[in-house]
Length: 530
Image (cartoon, rainbow, N blue to C red; front, side, top):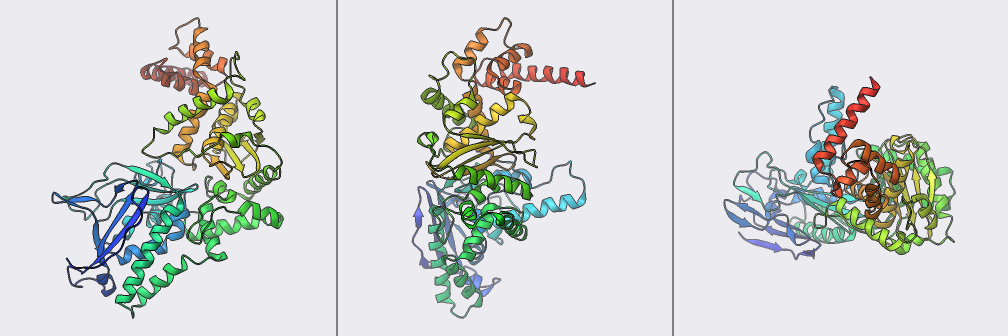
């Protein structure tokens, strides 16, 4: 097949790279729009050394996806802002990455029987997929099953493979196992833009009178323009206070209106970003990070509480932040250990390096005292959304803070609050680069993998090996009983369930024993309520 333009690979295959090749239409324009026919070609999408377009056709290896490329180019340009800035998943936060969450939520739960709610679920799912899944641009072609979205200050590419309608049995993509990577936004935005602009201009040279291609060239060039309107559009999707373009825009306008009584300087601190470029907001914004991890129907009272907390901490710039010397960005992706294993390892590291000597000889870890020693302010912050357990807040040259929600059922007990504080400490230490902004609300809409890691971190930090060993050694009964586990949890001042699962993870009890204890405990509690 004749090649009329083999565009150079843009980017780095070991991080992110994109490549297009334009070829002559094998059908010579029959059955295709003339503009589409001009765009027949092939593309490759590389992440971390893996070509997501590689597949087999009838037993032969093929390195590229072949089809009409104009709809793909238009899709990238049309969805640029949400593609690189919208994090919150549709309907439910059901997976660690975008691809597997879409698979888990493509049908509404069976408990939803109201027809309007079913339709709403399906519409939200479809709209989000249209903005984020490359399949949405295939228009009959065989494209890799890749989802692109924002996750905090990274861009996530996730993939898997489910044979869709119209895909022949003899086609099999190499990347069949679900996976994901998270990259710096510019690592994705810049090579992607270079290919889009080069491809649009090439098509413009071939069809200078095409109105459709002229629109594509103009829209692509606008992506590089630096102006307040484009910045506002990217910020709007970063905050994500809504479920589609209309409601996201409305939510962003509401947010700006709600903080309108703050001074211009204070508003600037709330909405200021770091590392932004015309193509993508690369760094962090307190408002965007904070509200991107809460329910999309957050109310005005919650917005103002959060804003006030951020500004209160930001005003204390003369304070020394000991946490800065300890913190680092510790990414999670499919090449690393499971999130809970990472959480355990990080907690052991923190305990051995920074805590062990201070709490030698004590029966439990005094998390509040420790946070105070590290200059982390603990704030009680009631939320209208009871599902929010806590919030971690940090930023350049100001004091870090941890807010806990008294309305969350898990925080009703001292043990639950201690766990929340340790969980949020993990975010402060390992979910930001040194000195970078952080604002994450731990609840149903926060990224699941960093939540799993933070839970494991909290468990190991509050229940380190030697304290567990001491507590178990003092028992007068076998460990694999509800009473014994309750005694250990009282000794360590941790919740029963967290202690039980931690003992299983440390191999003090088996998974069978854990399940039996849980069932016996639940049966006893049910009998007490009757």
